Image (tube, rainbow, N blue to C red; front, top):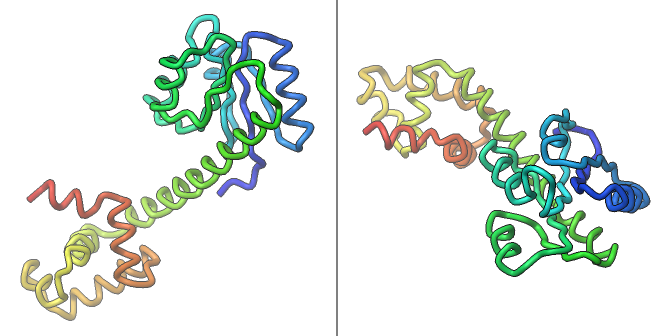
Amino acid sequence: MSTENPVVFIIDDDASVRNALTNLLRSVGLKAEAFSTAQEFLSSTRPDAPGCLVLDVRLPGSSGLDLQRQLADAGVHLPIIFITGYGDIEMSVQAMKAGAVEFLTKPFREQVLLDAVQRAIQRDREAYTQRAALAEWRDRYQSLSAREREIMVMVVRGLLNKQIAGELGTTEATVKVHRAKLMHKMQADSLADLIRMAEKLGVSATWQAST
């Protein structure tokens, strides 16, 4: 996992709001980066670190809700805290259903925003850790040979070595060797550990879809 500190991104077309929020977040030790438009944010290079987005609903060009959809479509799962001076119930429901952490109407108390930011960062930190683990498991899976992958699928299906040998037309001893190698490469300490990795990687689902 990245050792970089969390980053709070702020998008608001009002310079005074951007400055106030940036100063507030930095006053409690958080790193903050501010942008005036969604496009400016999308064009920036973001650090590989957990964080969140404090986003004004109404922006020139793409709205905050538009950006929320764009990020979701691009697979960017950055927790969002919406802020607005013109919010309504329908808008807030739409934002929350799409995964927003909070929907705050201006003016809001500083502590309310800070609490929401901390919740959002914690959510992203946990998701960040999960994504990093999944990426590591994918790398391990890619290191398996074709035969080891075949055997891994059968192992997570619950087949015994003897049954696997029968399906592959090989010996039980050979299956044991391949099984030991794949367990080592996947760094799985137990069958339950291997099954958990396979579920996250979609390995068992791949076998089911092909049968």
